[in-house]
Image 1 (cartoon, rainbow, N blue to C red):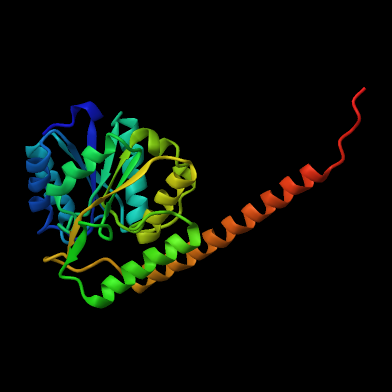
Image 2: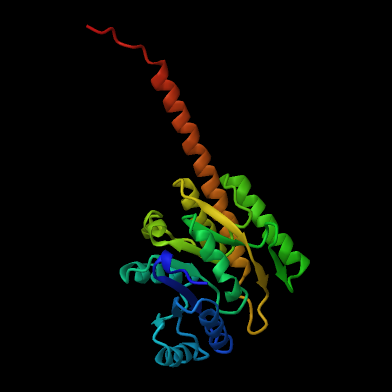
Length: 261
């Protein structure tokens, strides 16, 4: 199965201390969709992940590496990758974790769906999706966070917090990325919500999220608190804006019409 009709595809893989998993995940990506290019974005990993990425890139011309000075966050890494992808003329950009939780074997599913969409989300919480090796508390947190997001923002998405997704380049250009300041799971909600607000076609496809077998999860209490706080603020701001627009519209309708001459 090939995806030449979509144009050039770039898979962005941010890394921080992923020296053991990175070679494996790159091999699986190349085996699943051989024609895609890969951009590894390393945040100066203390364990030498960046150097390992350089070695892999030296052996594979379809692998590139971006080195950053320090750990600046997932959102900042993706924004840097998006900017580079657009400058290099890629038509499709994919987000993927380095730890194997996003299965490269499911990448064709996302790319197939992109033929009829502007943004495709890999979803754990639609029919056919799921998780492996998750605790019940983690599942409740994820499902609850997505329910809260749907309620506050009015987005018809079952999994707006997931990080396995495929964008058309034109979609990224329409999202006003210059003022994105969110990080972590909130970054993913932010981009999905922007796409919905702009009337773009956002499609969800089922994926199975596999909890990492090597290393430690990057999720922290700070990331969860940030996501809840920002979604709450966005939701209230959106409601206030809609109320003001509605009131303004009523005022315009109630103004007396001047007699024509």
